[in-house]
Length: 640
Image (tube, rainbow, N blue to C red; front, top):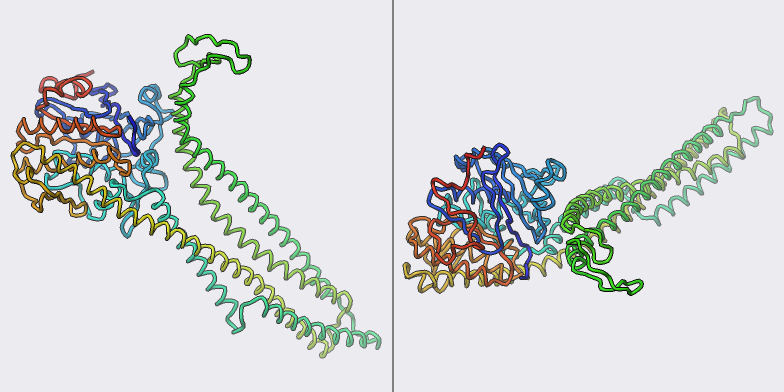
């Protein structure tokens, strides 16, 4: 059977107490029924599955028997990739999770090696929701003014129909619930947020922050270096530089003439070489600073180039690793009848799973496990490298501007030194002092122009960066606009598909509610957290249960028949006969569930708990574990 993505499946559940398994059962694709008498512990097992997948149980939501246990270990498949999830049982919310990137059989052999710990909430390190979303291929959707991200717990609230929540509500109840969270989760599962759309949203946000920085830099440069009313352009700076250099040359000629007269007149005034020494020392200082800046710039540029290659390599590795499962499966099926080198017949291999050519045993599950670990690690390394690369590019820009300014100052100092060597000066003549002051003033103005020229170069680079960012922003907005149109169409089509599924459930119900029998429309509001049939919202308690269950099931069934949904094709239901549901009505619902799950286009998993199973469904391949009673409860707490 094909498997639409995202696809979540629970393969096993183990509950430990003091190191011993008090519950240990396998689960399968399709309908799974946990059956037993009322109060035999079925709801506890359903809560453990919810908790093991990342759901949040508050202090007052833990059942007494559950708190006697220590650990929940869940084997899962995320888009066909096997993982093992482990959470400690504690009477407090927001528990962390340990993840083993491999099947339960491998995880149980490893005490600590191979396990990685992830927090419930995002912080400096990744949360387990980020890892699970990444492996499911779900975008990390942000919502609200605080840019809160959707978590695994919030998704599971729309996948788990539990006994404690109101039958009038769509979502599993939780404190501090809000409409925007519910709407975002609902739209996500209906397939509204594609990875391309959300990547563009994130990119747009980053680009807008960058263009703001570039614009602020342009404003600062213009304000600081253009405050005297002159245009901040290279043409004006060059013209002003030529004018000042002409003035300085004229002053230097006058200085040379006066110094020559003083020298030829044999004044007793002692000549001074202080100016030559000071200028030469300044040349040396500037030369050292230029060398230091150049060395630092080259090092940063080299790091940036290496990082670009590293990021490209990680990107290619990630792309290759995502295809590795398919490749491993294909190679696993490849067998040689003749040697490709000499064409001699190849004898059959005796070892199961060994290569047909070299006869060496291979473990394809370990290969896929390593690929999962590498996907997670390379994704983190790539994002970290991208963050560092942005700071490197900014540092390169700053160093280039600094180098240009220092080079200009060095060239001016060189010109001044040439003049000072050619014309030794005296400090005794008033006129000479006056000329030297004027020459110094012109020299300082030239130095200021050198700084301004560097600022102009930085300004030009900032303007080019701003223009390039604007083009990228326009591209991102175009992608978002196209995606939003697609989102509206997808939501509309998905809602219609879900409505048709709910209508089918209602019309096939036993004739207990006339509105269901004559149902024409089904309305559902994620933000309002409510359902209606033909505009009506109030029915008997058992009919409200049937309506809510039909809706939760229809989301999963619709997704299993259409790959456009982002629903993980998974569902938990602990309310099949809640609120006085009569046996025949419950069994009829179970049959419809089994039929729809079996006939779906994609693989899917539906896990339900019931005390009155339909006879034809009470068989291996559908049921999980024993028929539990008060004497044979789900949790065998007597295990020593």
